[in-house]
Length: 412
Ligand code: HSE
Image (cartoon, rainbow, N blue to C red):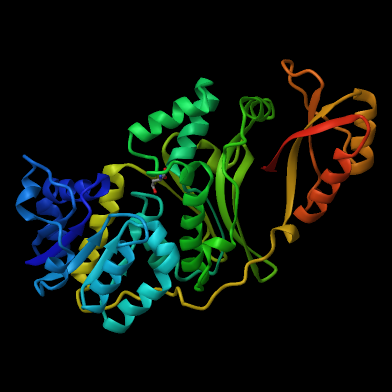
């Protein structure tokens, strides 16, 4: 029998208990040993819940108990999660976590401790909820050199954008539903400003490229500036707006970004709707691989946590190697990255505005919406972001142009 302890009895923690109870027989068979939840740590009480019998509010009960071999951290946030996890690893207990903030900030250090102690630090649930992304990168694609990872890594924003597009509902109304369904972070700004997706792409990039990609170095833009009119333009052009997290090798350098992107309805990620996440991985041998599934929610996330618990049981005193080193990766600057922009412009005088557009961007073709007066949109040629920003500054200063209403990156 293997004893485990669960730190946190919130959405994910209660999901882990539920999954272990629901599929006890098959999980134990897969692990080759019986898994017993010896403790649940939480400061709250849960009268009437069977978990009360094993509830503690003192981390020392767990850290000092030699019978506990695996600690499951599902509290979220950096502290006290980081201190508890580090102490657990240092005392020889393997750790499984769903905490992307912790993994993005301290992953390389915690992996190093696990390696030195010949135990495991596993974090499948930290990215993409129930989709086996970490394991795929760390085990199934190890024959490849990965040169691109692009994904929809935040369920809340994909849910919001889908509902705004398909049902014409407002941003606030849909965000509220995402919160009720348990998809959104405690502070939903982490979702809608792109910070959650940023941490997730930092984790995937560190794994794929074998070095520490600091999430603070990743250019991050959320979906709060996306309006109904942007969505109408996208629909007119047979495109969808998605919050994409991407990292790519360009001329032996790595570039990473989180931002809304208009993608053609033919793009494989355009079909990913609602709370679903998907990741497109490109390898130099295997080609394109796409993984798809529920990226948020109690049971999909708990499923990924329990998979790690099973793996930790199977590798009790044997470290599962991760290539993610503590060496820091220098990312390419955004200004050097080639891209195309979709640009909305409001004008004072149509004919002259078109002439000015031709002079500055060398573009003739415009797109307009019937419901919008004194405004058109256009798509730039591909240039570096630095050059496109300079051209935007020049366009803003032209006489016939009123203002730039919005700019969104666009890909086919
Ligand atoms: N808030 C996150 C999301 C939860 O919406 O994807 C899963 O990490």
